[in-house]
Length: 87
Image 1: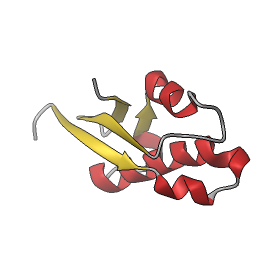
Image 2: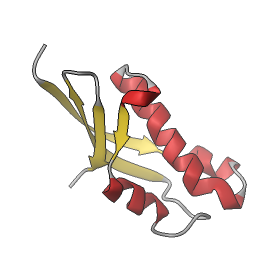
Image 3: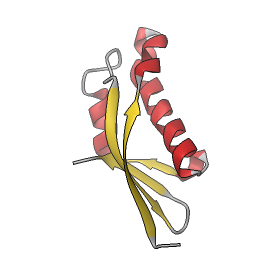
Image 4: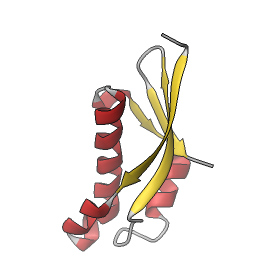
């Protein structure tokens, strides 16, 4: 296997609207983590979400996260996946 695997993904966050208004951004972060776990085949402890992505989700407050977000996921040899905003 190569040193690291890198993917650009667009993660749909439509299901966050099902959460109560005051929990939507927190749910969006959980959805991003679940999506990365499913697509990069790692467990929850090995997903690291970058501060820039977290700030993008929380930019409009707790009630109004974006409906989708494009991220860059890099999987390292030790199984850690780093998720950041795609430029």
